[in-house]
Image (cartoon, rainbow, N blue to C red; front, side, top):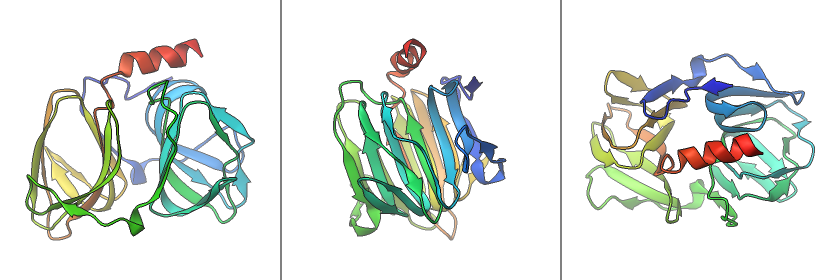
Length: 230
């Protein structure tokens, strides 16, 4: 299966307009954003757990990264409310579920294969700092290594945010909205720009809170190859 699998192209998906698709697990539904592979896939999705739904215990061979958008995600490591940012590296395992239901933005099979760093953060308790280069922008750093940088940015109302993305970038609107090119991205809209892209975004009177990942497309061929060999 291939969905938005041309990584040389800019892509925008307004996930709130997409239908929920049943997963193989009862009570778990998906809105795919990009995907290469079938049930084992390099994938980016919005996933909804109905109340009481859960997965059986499993290992994340290629790693799993997610942020909780609604409700409370649960596994044997704890309860993770809205604003929780989690990285379960390759070879980690858990039994995920949601007693009261939840919605998460999740990425699979997109880790460096030697990464073994667990991350469990709640952005609601982290203080953003002003961006040194962009007025009206503040940043909460969530993760950084030699391959990628993940952050939460707050863009104040009526702000222009412009930068290069030499290794590609992804954006998920958590609150508010912004415009880029001919697109207006609202809550839970997702954008992926290719390597070498130039991003120029504008906020209106609402401003925006945006999850951003930089550099994650540099190893795309290796990521897809690992999925196909699994």
